[in-house]
Amino acid sequence: EGVCGELIDKALFRLLAPNAQHPFTYEGFCSAIDHYNSRHAEKVFRMGTRQQRIGELTAFLGMASHETDGFIAAREYLACGDNVVVDGELYCVPCASEDYNFDTHTCSISMLENDQSYMEFCQPYTTPPKGCTCEYVKEVEASGQLEGHMKANDIFFGRGSIQISNNFNYIRASATMTGSKDTFCEEPELLSTVETYSWGVGIFIWVELMKEEDKTSHTHALNGSFGSALNIINGSSECPVKEDEEWHSKAVRGRLDHYCNVAQAMGAINLLSFNGCDGLEAVFRQCLTDGSCPNCKYFDPRVIRTAPPTDSTGAPPKAA
Image (cartoon, rainbow, N blue to C red; front, side):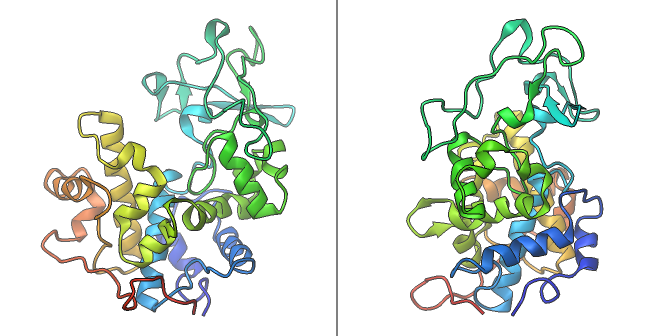
């Protein structure tokens, strides 16, 4: 059985992603699924029962909706939300969260001011074949149009439907997705501009990234756990939920709200379990009390969210 046309069609995609912008198109999503599944025995969104497949697809799209601000942003806001194109090249103003305006997507103080180096997303001593070659960067110009800017293609910041970052992750994704370790190392912006790559890197993270052997977001979702899938994607920041840190607390609530929005559009009756991410269930219930996750009101907290069935061993099911 297929995914596009079977579990989701263009009308449904428009319903759950009404503001989607390039590169997050329905056609690109379908192409990325086909591209991955044609090259791997483990099939994304094609494993197990129909209920499991829909549950996994919903969890993935919920994660992606949050990571891309509703399928709008292909680049991490703090690294490159404030940007400019000059002579066909994209330049970014790296920003601290307290200096970034999320309404206007402008940065009041560049992290490159006063001859500072930008040191994020690069381990310079992790070199090929373990990591893309990288170095700390400074502003392109000390004055003028590109003051406070850095060249986007020099930095391995978060990009894609589920954001990938750091030079050691880019090289892995490049080898898996393109057959060459050089592709994304030489031009990381491909993950922000090419539809199949922008969607595909999220699928790569979903199916390939693991914290323990044979446990991925893909297998956790198939076995009914949204929380465990999140723990792999961003557990260091969101599992456990840091309620005393406003930034992370808002991020977790935003992720839940995006997941609930997609789940409603997909016709879900129950959400997947929040087990596997400490504090996530409590935040969900608090959301319903204080209204901070408005899309989640549809899902009554008294409804038991049961996991889709697995086989007697608990192993991931076989592909359809």
